[in-house]
Amino acid sequence: MMSDKAKWSLVIGRLILESNEVDVMLTSVLGDVFKQKPSKTWWTDSFGKRCKKIYLLVEQQLEKIKKGAQDAEKIDHDGMKHLKHLLERTLHVIDVRNHVAHGTFVLDIDGANGNYPVTEFSLMRMHKDVTIMSFEKIKIETLHCKTLSDDFSRFLAVYGFRQQGSPAIYT
Image (cartoon, rainbow, N blue to C red):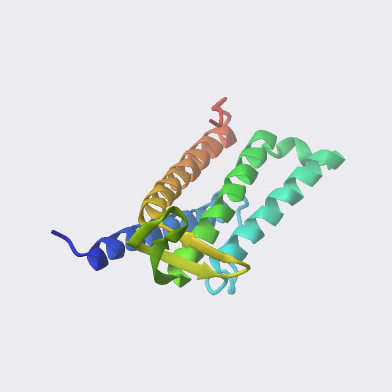
């Protein structure tokens, strides 16, 4: 039987790896969609800063479309809207990743429900408020990270096809 420490190590490690996949996808988006090479600070910026940089690029493209800029017809409007949604989902992943990476193990005593003694270990983070994340919640969030990474991969594939004239559709 695996110890609690070993179980937690596996689930935390998996979440960190899956969130790193999403982070790496941002570099692919920067190059494949915006045709930009990473700046000198790109690699030292936080995951959150990289996400915000891409988000600003998306907003700039959407603003060009809105204002009817000369090159607006070349912009994949559906692609930018889809990418914006992926980036909004990424903000949640960043928050969860930070909770797990910087959280503290605590004994989760469910005294409000009369469940004594300890029910399980949890991760607690004191940021703006106290947040508790259970083992099961981390497993669910890991699946969300994996799904988001897969969704970025599909987005990049469809975006590439559309740039070649394919009528591929974002799903």
